[in-house]
Image 1 (spheres, helix red, strand yellow):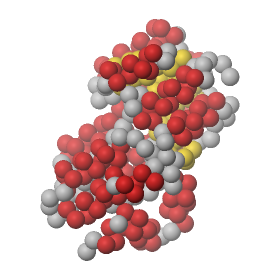
Image 2 (cartoon, rainbow, N blue to C red; image 1 turned 135 degrees about the vertical axis):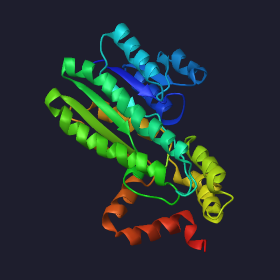
Image 3 (tube, rainbow, N blue to C red; image 1 turned 180 degrees about the horizontal axis):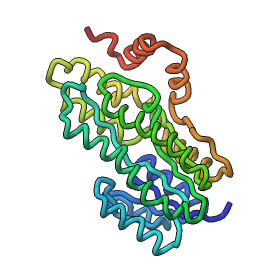
Image 4 (spheres, rainbow, N blue to C red; image 1 turned 120 degrees about the vertical axis):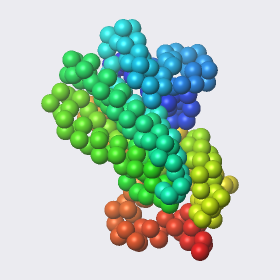
Length: 278
């Protein structure tokens, strides 16, 4: 497998950090991008090229791509990992926060794809890896805006895959299940802030506990599992269109396919503890 030039977003922690390290260990030239550059010093010590990038700022994304092309002459793989989970009852979430969720999880990823594609098309090769979630196939209470972003990125990836086939560019979707990262804590904090004190308060507290309580630790896989999955996709000559990995990802996606809407609602309410809330 030849050395590839790879950009990983959201590389300062969690899945992005683990992925950048794994791909670098495989001998690839890896650029790790994030807003919090100070948290990536250990990545730089491991030979990863660290980039400051804010995926809500177009100039920042353009500068990152231009730097990679100037230094390497190409970009072979883009791993769109940056994102976050903002939970809250649909009635409570301010539209500003809803738009911010889409700006990071969808529009930032798509804009980077737009910037990367001319260079990939010129070489008639490349791989776009979009990190969605099993949450791009299922739904959980109080997560409407988050799931909306992941459903959107799944659909965009499918359309993109067909558009890029004539140019020899692969599009891969990674669907993590429960992963041990900062994601759950951030989502739970936002949930309590948004819906913890109103009519949805009882649901919000139960849901937040299901995300971060002691029992949740047994429902989380290490981020290295997703890093290894991305590595397999990057290594494959003909990668799959989708890889589900991490705690409960495959069985939960299968259940969603198998069950009716209301039956799956019941499963989710019981799994999160909301069945006990009046």
